[in-house]
Amino acid sequence: MSKPLVEELYTPNLTAVRERIKTDPRLKVLLDDKADPALFEAFLITWNSLGVYMTEPVDGWIRRAGEATVKVGLDDVGQKLIAHAKHEAGHHLMMVEDTKHLVARWNERRSPKLNVEELLAQPPTAAMKEYREIHENTITGEMPAAQVAIEYEIEGLSTVLGPVILEQAKKVCGEEILQGMSFLKEHTEIDVGHTALNEVMLDKLLAQVPDKAPIIAKTGASALDIYLRFMGDCVERAGKLVQSAAAA
Image (cartoon, rainbow, N blue to C red; front, side, top):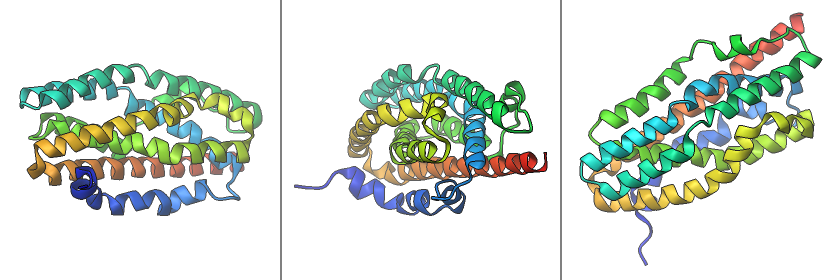
């Protein structure tokens, strides 16, 4: 029995960037057994508040990528993307609510006091801008169906890192903090199914256009690289927040 095309044509090109999930020094600080609770809280606040910028356009990206995919003749993959887009609408609102909960928790315990609106209005980092750009470039590029690879990597990241971060949150900050982690909790659960479906869709796509495997793999690798850099940015900003707290 031949192995899936995802395994043959796609995964070998993702090995290096996926390895960084385990080795990135900024993430290792966050997930260390002796992680600073203040740093972890500050990370969650930063990740949720900045994550709104990353998450709000997602359903539109997936729908537009699906429509563009249909136009280039890959109807099955395109229609599945369009259907999937409906499941992503409004998810950024969970991150807004999580930010509010986490900021209230922080302000009860720590200084400096944080302002939700100011956090949500922070300027995007370079990685955040690149995240929007890779979606737009994929939609308007020669292979809009490569959106499947973006979904496969980013939703797959939820299934890999999500449980680890949730467990670390309970260990470092106490179980109560999970009340401000609704977005991560939900995506850790639902993205298991999404990732399985994405893998099937990606395998079908590679069967239809095997010559496009390099660009599809490059798109997935680039999206994951950008998101990991975004998470690193969140750890760095969290560190600055903790320094301000220490000074206060």
